[in-house]
Image 1: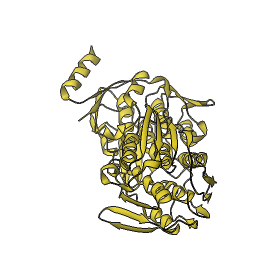
Image 2 (image 1 turned 180 degrees about the vertical axis):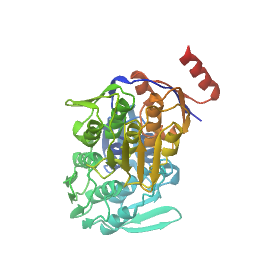
Image 3 (image 1 turned 30 degrees about the horizontal axis):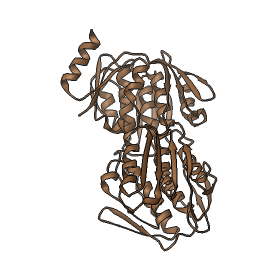
Length: 431
């Protein structure tokens, strides 16, 4: 099993290019199958989640051409099946976006119930509520969601809770429904806007994405388009926190600074220096960070996907910090691993109470999920001695060439798959 081996006590410095947004790309790739013409999507991140979804799209018969590492051309006219099996869903939860795309285009879909990172319960009841409101019949049995409709008709839908997945899925289905649809209490994340923009470039009529209310006028069909995925807000935030954690100086390039405001605000609050440019942000770490209070909230609040990275920074800040996780109940599973590195963090329900320490100590830890795994790697770069991070397949799901980008910033890190290789790395690092 592959793992990262890290020689710590390193301050990261330099520039890093941010890849396309994984969460936006997943919705955009699903939307691409809704046209019966070629749709080109570029600036895709080359990560496992994206590659698995492309396999799932090929699995239902759509034609996929890989132009290069970051560009695909998808033709949905060759789709011959509306069934997405558990083989794909168990690897990435976002395969369920094919549910909304297939219901919208084919008026039927059979999609396995989702898997993905075990960070807490993420039911699909709001997705189903939206599909039923549009006129679909939905049944769940034997681990599959079965949906079909004579036709889809626009409706006024108020989501009981804010859900990114439900917003994207129902928005896709409604794009090809007859009449008008109003979606209220929707998610407002940048990738919601990106998927809506993608659909509009294909001929959809969607207004209000990024606000509380999305208005959709159904169209008869969608057509060919070329679209570029926005930069990844969470990858950018991870490297921003890396500058703070390692007391470094990192310029994060190819970003939309507006999308990073909540992260920038917290880094400023704990004492870091931040310089914003048109499409870049520079973060300069400081010797003594200050404690802060964070509560994760839907966008534009502080993102749950950035909670582990920021908590690692707060673990090195003076005083006592409080982090409240209001989105996923299992998001703190990495705390035990971080405490093994010397942090002083107590978890009470959905709240972590963090007492700052001076330094992490290198040891062997295990990544419990995607974002926590990345946070533990960065903690290892700042720690004394050597750190080994296991279960890195989670990290590879969402970060393109993570270790390569870190090495360019000065990190001493290597991906190995055997104890012998780990010992060789340590020998080279010493010598």
